[in-house]
Amino acid sequence: MARGTVLDDEDVRRLADRYDKTPAQVALRWATQHRDVVVIPKSTDEDHLRENLELFDFKLTREEVDALTKPSLLKSGKAMLDGMVGEIR
Picture 1 (cartoon, helix red, strand yellow):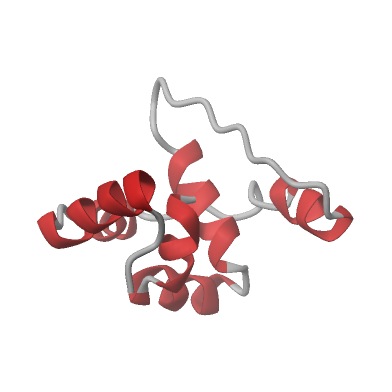
Picture 2: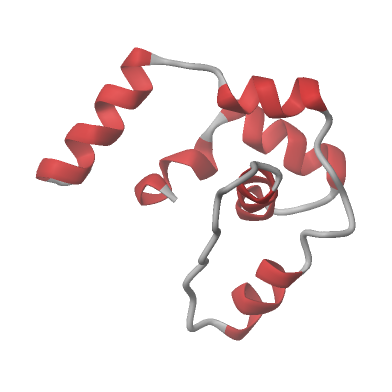
């Protein structure tokens, strides 16, 4: 999930609190609500595997999906550079 940076996003955390979910569950839910997108979460931790399956008991509103999809050149550029050279702080 973007080398973990999405989990620290303010909007993701706000929605996680609202739905009593983890930021990872919100991010996975966001991805599963998109057409023609296949989500393949990876984990070896039993708790994380369980959490990955517990994201179908809530649904993000159109407004929430749009808020999480918001374009950000700064975030997109940083994520791209993180993937190329390692995490930038």
